[in-house]
Amino acid sequence: MARLAGRLEAKWVPAPGNRLTMILGGFYDGVYDLRRDDYSATTRQALGSGGELRELYWDTGHGDWLLRLGKQQVTWGQGDYFRVLDVINPVEMRDFILSYVARFEDARRPLWMINAAHQGESVETQFLLIPQFRHTLLAPVGADFGLSPGALQGLTGPTQEDPDVDLFNPAYGLRVSGSSEAGFDWAGYLYSGYNPDPFLAVEAAEGRAELTYHPRRLVGASWSVPVANIVLRGDLAYYWKEPYQGTHPERDPAPTSDTWAALLGVDYVEKHWTVNAQYGIKRLLNSIDIQSAQTQQDASLFVQWQTLDERRKLSLLLMHKDDVVESGMAKWAGTFQPHADWKWTLGYIAFYGDRAGQFGQYGDQDRYFTEIEYVF
Amino acid sequence: MFKRAMVAVLLCLLTPGGALAAPTGKEIMSAVRDRPDGDDRSSTIQLRTLATDGFERKMVMRFREKDEGTDRKTLMYFDQPTDIAGTGLLLYSYEETGEREDDIWLYLPALRKVKRVAARDREGPFMGTDYSYADLERIRVNDYTYEVLGEETLGDRKTYHLAATAAGTRTTERTGYTRLELWVDQERWLILQEHFFDRDGRLKKELHVLKAEQIDGFWTAIESRIDNVQSGSKTFMTINDLHFDSGIDEGVFDKSALTRGLF
Image (cartoon, rainbow over all chains, first blue to last red; front, side):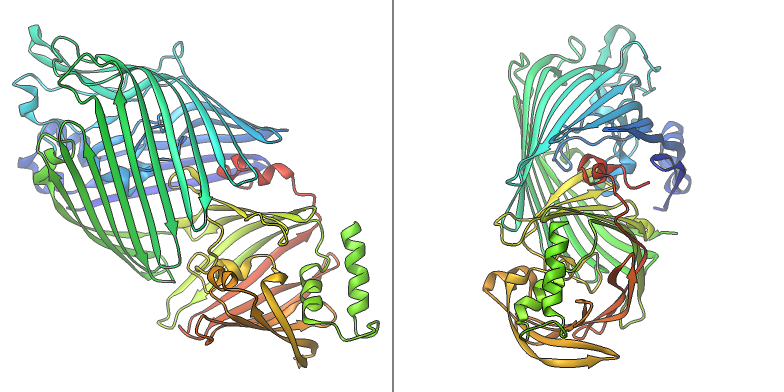
């Protein structure tokens, strides 16, 4: 109802080629005070207010090497919304996908890491060493976008705590990229670490549900190329023994299957219109759980019209998912900038489809929203 | 160095005192494109847009540019306004006689991602200002055919007055212009005034150079204004801290460096 969010960014350059960046973030959501009776204390505490040192990193370099050390974000792959290769940072899903599509950088959870890049003659190589694990953040049971009590079948709900930093089992990442003379950008990826998404496990004897986390290893590639007035882009990934949510969490909370995923996107931008369309597919190759979806398909369409001075914008975002059932989300928004420092947005979000679907389960969470943004 | 020597010879031939014959429009525009401007350039650019309803937006960006033979690499980083601070634009532009399209990448700090941008359509406004991407790109002499309309004096400067007509539909599709009128300084080879005509042949915008200075030995327009006569808005451009041949590190223009910014 009345969410206030603030962000403070500071940079310090003590010498050319060296820079310290610090980003603080915080929020207060008045709905949890105004409607105290509708939410549990756990929900109010988790979603009512919060703040953290979002990022703190040191940039430096020597010769062909660039180093970024500290708490930071790294985005991999060409996909928007769909995380085929964007596996480095976990995400904030306490508002389901709403924060992720509206304020991408604030909806990702930065990690402490060493990020080193080597600029070769025609190939750039990035090395990541990530000694910290943080999980994807879910809303508590009973929150607007929390796990439904029915899904827990009377078991005590799970809680999320970030496991301790494990310096002895860090995650590693490698990215090699380049461009051809024909304007073809390419990149190859290797990652060995953790899947930040939780999987529900049931301790039947104790009548308790808990969330578990599992390793992830992948190899992937991404590309993009301009063709006339559009840009085509894509991601491809192969995950070894990727965990998936089984239908019998009391027996096996996270069975694994080798899995591949692909994404194809197209971007078109001209003076008034921006159009972005994507199709993604994910296939489990040797799943033993026949009730789980062997193939998942996703599609998105973003259309925006804007005036030449970019002060008035109208946009529509459609996201559709087909796993065992079909469901999706539509978001309309209109933005007006009356002053250089102020923006006002008015919009509506609707969820549709089967109530067992990832989007359809929130069919009773359709909402109008308005945002006022002030930049200093 | 060879390019610089060739340009010096060309300028000498075109300079009124040394000319054997009046230069053609194409020769004049080639001289504008090839006038000496060092091997690299760095500056801070301020863009201030004023709309008819009083809305005012100010942008500040850091600009770096380096020549590599006939190719050119350009990097722009936005520092203001705050909501786009950190946005970076990297452009590799190639010799216009070649078939190769320019390469453009955009770094969006909110996405922490570098995105490839299609280079063919340059008609759209540059970051909501009255400048289009086409207005800011390297002069493409062969995109137009020229006619010298005469000589005029603007302020205290003697100029050639040229009409330029789009050489083909591709130029109009790319830029949105069918015709230009230009006033070129006869000594400094700077465009001092330019009129842009839209697809219907109507006057769309006017560019006026307000101040030119010789910095590090090179003449440059450091203050200019573009008026959108159709919408009534106008954008002022001011170039500060301009330096030529400061030896900008090649690595600044790498795609991977785009995510880090300039510091």
